[in-house]
Length: 473
Image 1 (cartoon, one colour):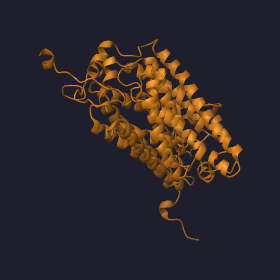
Image 2: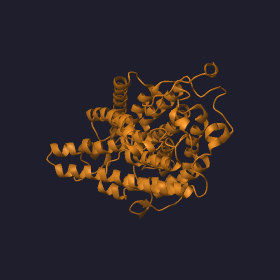
Image 3: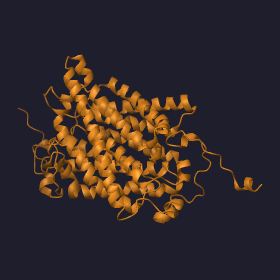
Image 4: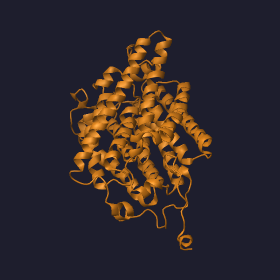
């Protein structure tokens, strides 16, 4: 019998239960997800908004990242993944003691410290996505209160219910590979709900909100896309074949979605919109997330086509027709890119989920769970496939109802302490009035941009700016 190489021998720092390769990949995946937020979404938010909101938008993301971490190790992790207190919530506890952090985590061959870090970056990006719906008018002090409250009373509930083995939806066998429900559907619904309570931007900003730097916006979008290798690739908590499949499916779906959105923009608007392509990229990433490691490559292609077209239709067509969507000022169209795309991904996961891939990921032999409806119909197990689809729909209903209620309650509570919306003076001035700082030492707010594609919803026609000299003449 060959001896174990010296570098693989267990010691106090590398106990027998820990897999060094898995641990190294999980820390790398977590850092990739962290880079999606800082600097990814910090750059994206700071560049896609009007110049006067660049600092405020970027800082809302940076603040959320820091605040979530402190809350996460203070009580959030155990409420999401700790000992059961309720069917939808764990018992609050701190995650700072070395005995707990160095012990084996509840899943995988990892120390708990790795899992605390990995799950933190997911919680952080969820709050940052919520912020996308609120850019350009929310009181920063209100945002400072919103982040810990929403993390505590919304995110932990969904994370425990769907991802923790003791959660009620997890026991029913819901498929949410890496956060289509917990992160994207939650943030889309919560952002839309909070936007209703905060109120809209100024009329001037709603009519004209050109990005201050499209090239930087693409840099942030690129970090978001590439970081998704860790987002979905970290789902199995192991450096295994399913992680490889999840990463490949992620990029295939995303590329297909981007191209689908781009073609629709060209056909209906006549020009290839860079902002539109970015939205198509995001919807593809979101849609594949709940299914990344449990569907085949051809399914990822089909999901990309649907994620590039259905959210496009909801944003470009339905947004102008449905009264509620027109009333709520969702700055980054988070409802369409995350709530619609996340729900779509959850439903498609329930349809395309492959039984073998589910066994690899969930490590179970229970044939009553984790079978997509398509395979149920093919294998004569229609009842099991329909049950899976029903569980997926139940998960959507739970996340939507919880987030509408909890987000509304939090906003109503906060406005008893501080205003949710900035004052009229602050809304007119922007960054300088709020932070005493400005992003650029340049004049103007991008008045030269006249393309209708500068709107996130891509449908408004803006009037030409008339110079003062012409007016005087």
